[in-house]
Image (tube, rainbow, N blue to C red; front, side, top):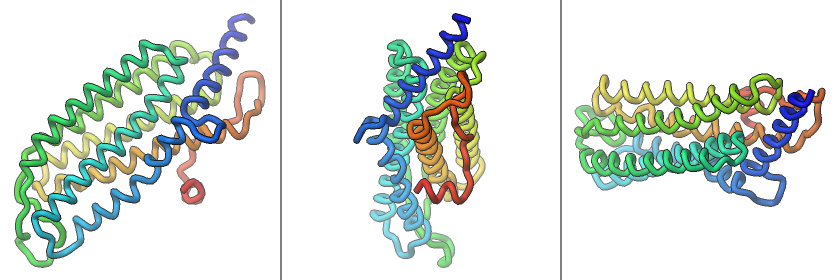
Length: 267
């Protein structure tokens, strides 16, 4: 009986820590400050992507400016999303300092690696006239393939966060049918699998298709990062607004929904 009560107390502590770190009930919090740019940065990425793809009579300077802007915005969008999911893992470990050190080390290594990759990739990109006048947008004529390493870095960072989430869930909470824990674990696994598949797809596009198609999926990946990260935050917000129990060990928490009406309501 004492062990069950301990599990119940741990679950309540997890809910408190998670909601405090990711989305507290006050006016503003770290979670809310992360939510706003993560949620709406896609509304900047998508127009620039469409402009660089469909606009006509673009010179080299305009194309290079669009490329640098998209790379920077994609990196920021993915970084913000990774921070949000790192907060989730940190909360699940009850603010363990070792976990915080692991997450910070992973973030620093990933940042340094991406800086070197971008410094090598961006100057190598060249633009030219398309072979046919009906082809619009910025037409790439050359670039090295080192950009594939950026997707490997993303997969590595996501693997660390997912491993921490799964280890905590199965080693400490696996015997408790707690809805908050179950959904945080399920959302984390779904997030990792989705981003892993998209990273692999981007790597395949880089190596198998002509250079003109190298960025065909990169914008989708950054947008999907922000959608999944902010959906997780909105999910936790519902817990903050509806704190009641169906039974002593089961919180009320609806499964994550990706329905069209739900999506529109959350914009």
